[in-house]
Image 1: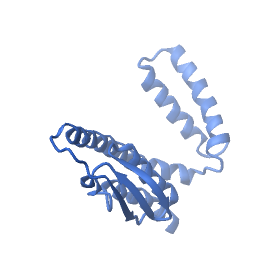
Image 2 (image 1 turned 90 degrees about the horizontal axis):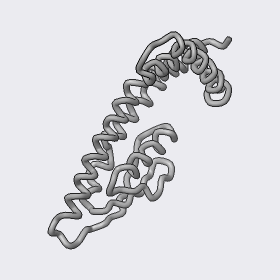
Image 3 (image 1 turned 60 degrees about the horizontal axis):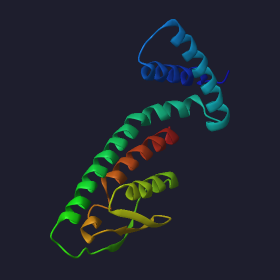
Length: 169
């Protein structure tokens, strides 16, 4: 068996138990079978060429990913409030704007993730992403604040930094 296969099976089994909510012999046996099968599938079709080093890197990034997801949820709620406030205000004119900014993210996957998060946040849509340049349509010009050097970008830089530390070692 490839290195790290057992770790993946154990992680799936822990998730199985957490989502099931109860522990019986049947649940445990079925969970082991499902976890083993899912680990085989993931190793063969999803994580081709994954090594133990890469798996440890993923585990190191997990808390940062969770912080990123929490930030995204928080920002979506705040943006919903801002859009609602804009809609319900007595202001008759909104001032839509196309905002252009540069990102210092190195990985394409990080840049695309940032673009997706901007689009998921109400009131903004990523119109274009070319290399490090973003064009974002803002429902109101006030929504442009915080696009450049956003907390999303900072968290993605933290995630990228883990990969660079491992490459240098």
